Length: 283
Image 1: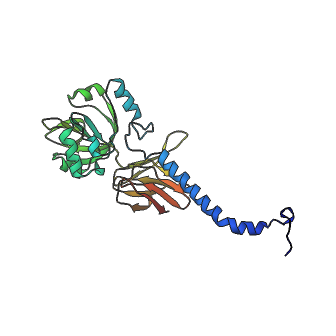
Image 2 (image 1 turned 90 degrees about the vertical axis):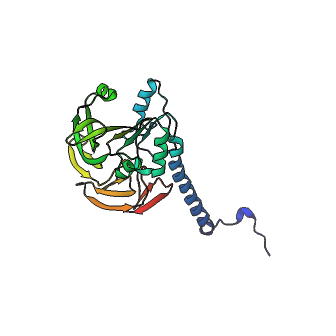
Image 3 (image 1 turned 135 degrees about the vertical axis):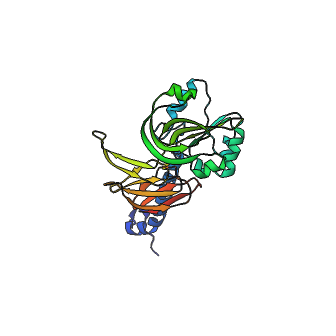
């Protein structure tokens, strides 16, 4: 046997690639997955009216405003955390809670504010309140409630509610934008909002290109690609709206409320739902 000095042995590039390509591909996949998970971890799902969110969907400005008046604002991770004795609890997505959770919150909080509740949530709290058609425009207080009188006229775009036995503010036709129900030990406030409309506006002048009406509450912001705008809804649908005219190209039901912004990744739409799962939908 003849020994070949190491420095004289030829380097087999093709052989090295054959030996290393599988480990390299696996390493690349693992790194990519780690980056994706880190992105989800560092960018938590945006919640409607989240007091930490500075976007139009969030309520950071409102949180800062009431904090300046000495009011402490905190985010409750679940219904148990929201059931705080003597507090005012805002529920931005009532449909995401069970009947028991809604009743537990109402039993302990001084004031419960429900944003755009449906009939199920209203019935859960034994409210004689009925959702009616929505409206858009300027509404006057139309009541003696101190907060409404001080707020004055508002620009309103959302659901109206009929409640003959309760205090009405911002009335329009046979409904009102705000209903206040006294429980004896506290109050439940119903506020109409999130009316299921997506607006496409011109960047140069703000003109309306189209308005698409979705038959439920939209709880995510919009992601767009070359042909669609993707939104999530409170009843667990991902909806693809045609960018040209706002028509629904397709919708897919996941069954759990969607409050995170959909992400377009190649031929798929990736979205997180409130059941703790992340879904990939072929678009």
